[in-house]
Length: 116
Image 1 (cartoon, helix red, strand yellow):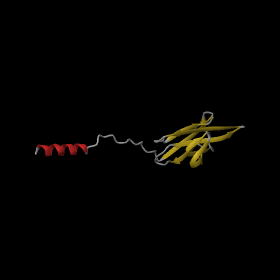
Image 2 (cartoon, rainbow, N blue to C red):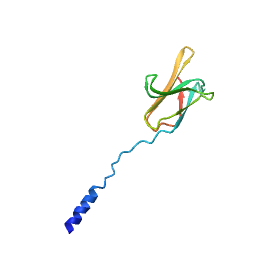
Image 3 (tube, rainbow, N blue to C red):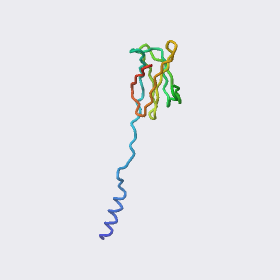
Image 4 (tube, one colour):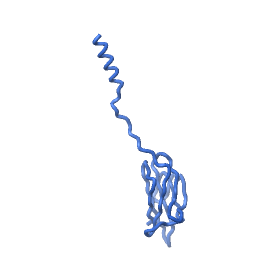
């Protein structure tokens, strides 16, 4: 009878996992507000792109592009997971100003890009 109890206890304990489960990253927020600054203030009318990557100053895997409003802000709906990038390029005088950032999830719900 003792042997039966020992076997039962061993079988029951072997079914109890040691807790080494995977940890998953929190989901991205549902939306993102991007503020584009230039020379210390918000910049309206700038095209801002949400993508999955940047190749130098070129967005790759473009998800959406929109322009900043009069407050220098653009709003995006975000996918629930994955690395995301936000970038803005604007021709200023005789040159081009660029700002871009890629982040892993969870992506922030607000982000400021400063054109340089």
